[in-house]
Image (cartoon, rainbow, N blue to C red; front, side, top):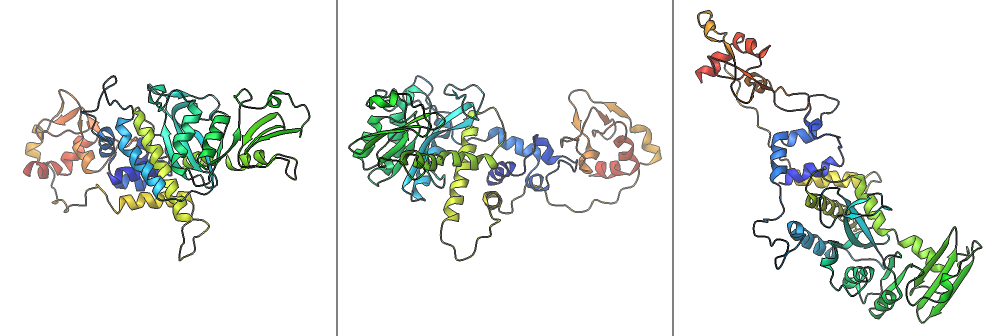
Length: 423
């Protein structure tokens, strides 16, 4: 299984548009590393039966205890705990949604036209704003999974994701979907500060935020306690609220909340960008595998961040980047494994079929499905797509499947038939 996961990770580095190309005899497509681990048939068999949890006794929809994420719940719980345990978050955090691309049938599939990945599984994520390290996440499965439906969705998401980081003085950056005056007040009660854009029609905002600003660089602000409301005209009017900034413009004329928002809001986008470089796994029909590959990819990036920023007693080469680290992780999983058979003893020297028996060796069409050609197996021949060579004919006397045009004659002329029939 470790070798199987190694291959899934390496697919993101050694990309091929079609699976068979990795095992192809064509040198333009062949991948020596992938094909040396296991055969394409074994890989497909493992992939067919690959699961993360036994679903035989899982509660179905409508039953008590039903969990739409049951198939991957153990993976979610493990990664959630691991992400928090191995990294001390810096002061600035960012909360945003990530999309795991999937277009198949799924009850909680989301459509977000403004995102690069428009269809898929929505994953609310909190990350370190500077490094993009994933600190926690929550897979959105619809309204039925809400903790408290009375609260706005954005409020609930930020509250649940940031709860493990309360009372530590963190600064949380969010966009206008999540932001509200109630959220800023709620976080402030837990010694957590907020900054982000906000919709102009949110409750509790001063009236001036609804006024149109016409001149570029025009700034209006108002403060109540720790809460600062800001309206600023750039290419368009931008409205923000913050509890971690002072009033007044910076040296370049922009308000301080806008400067920090632009600087620290992109933590989740940075995580998504890094994951997109070397995506784990290949396309398929099962939604939960896309989520597993996403979590493995996030785990690899998190491990890279922890390793890179931990103390070392040696110099790290500048050329050692995420790609090299990902390849080393895959090689560590492999640990020298190969399912390829080792070379056996050399075959006994064969002699041709005797002339007096040649009349018994007649080619005949097989009744039923095709079989693999025995000579092609011995010579390790494959189709251009890397599959075993199959034939509809066999030798009536030897009872072995053989290709009609070349292999039948070659099989008997070289004496392989004598050796095969004598074993």
